[in-house]
Amino acid sequence: MRGGNGNEGNGDERNGNAGSGNAGSGNPGNGGRVRELAATGRGVLVTGASRGIGRAIATAFARQGDRVAVHSTGRQADAEETLAALEGRGHVLVTGDLADPARVEALAGEAADALGGVDVLVNNAAVMVPHPLPGTSYADWQAAWQRTAAVNLFGAANLSYCAARRMIDDGRAGRIVNIGSRGAFRGEPDHPAYGATKAALHALGQSLAVSLAPHGIAVASVAPGFVATERVADRLTGPEGEQIRTQSPFGRVAAPEEIASAVLYLASPAALWSSGTVLDVNGASHLR
Picture 1 (cartoon, rainbow, N blue to C red):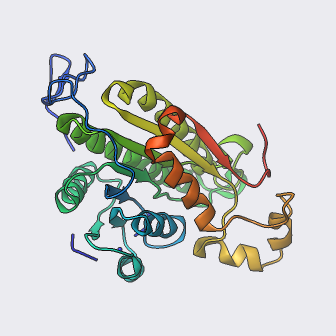
Picture 2: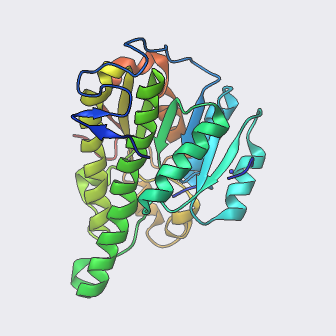
């Protein structure tokens, strides 16, 4: 960890009580008093923030005066670039593979220590490995599912636990925002593990929204459609680009900043009553 910019924890549980905050009774660790969530000046951890949607989210929070922990798994140069471009002070770079539960716990602590606590967690990091069933070997199928689930679902679940556990113990109201996907609803034939884990991430968010509400923690998800990021630039400029753009009646795909604006709202004090929602941000390309 160091002050600088990426994309892609553990309470003591005994007799139903996690750590010092009686999670079973819904009382925070400070005796029932929960500090209100501020509108700015907060500590925000964004996973997978080295580029693309994660970079846009980190930039948006920093612009409004929050301190941001930029997480990266391996794109060090991109992460440094993101961090260097953030407005304001107090930002930090944290690194680590989200598929490693021990590393997840450690980076949650590093972010909290550097920011003076994490008020907002954005689970943005994701793995998207092509593995269409008809053309994929069983070994490759297994590998794709295991890696995708390890990051997209288990990594997000573990980091949510670590961040929320600290919020509860500190008596700190907070927000968790998950970056899901339109693919959770319309299917991902070439990336079935991606679609399935994003659907599971939506469900995780709704379960946590109910569980964490007594602690002043709201949880919501954003389900983007196709977004113009570095990862899919070749598809947009290639033969299928026009077909992708016409999925939306607006005739284009989203900019990362449009996803960031939705995240910014769901992380705000005004969005408390939106806890549990899955917000479609897909330009009317898929209606449900």
